[in-house]
Length: 222
Image 1 (cartoon, rainbow, N blue to C red):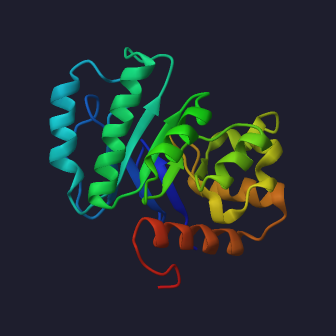
Image 2 (tube, rainbow, N blue to C red):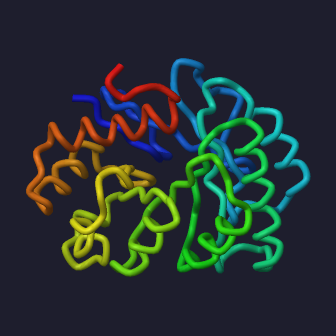
């Protein structure tokens, strides 16, 4: 089975199709491997030298093994004001649209802000909120406005919001990720199957189809 890991900071050697996230201003970018998939972006925590970071991002983003832009978005811990974060986010959106690459979004209690900008900017590329952990109403709003939700290790804690409502999110709007966690990606798939009663085979096939269609630009059956 082909497990897709849409967002990780700890690349593995297993058989998953995973996207390793490169944080400009934090991660070493010179050692990336062209046989792997990557996303690249300016995380709202790492904005000390913004002009230089933008130059690096623009330089690398067009590389063929960079298949997504981000993570980027909004966070109260950022050194930037909310308006400055919005300006940086729009910069990522414009790059995503120019290069025809999906956008990976960091959104801490700012999903409404993300939806507001999606309605204004009307992007053609898919937007994926990584580490999604919110209530059913927020999930419904994401679905309504065509956002994907990527779910991680919090799914394995039965007290989290996402564990309680994930069965209400269609698989067609879902991805799975490990982010900074040491959990293997298949453990998150297995937990999802346990919570929803769906077969692992059905889950992996549907998620891979999502991945192939939106990130690889091909039919998921190929």
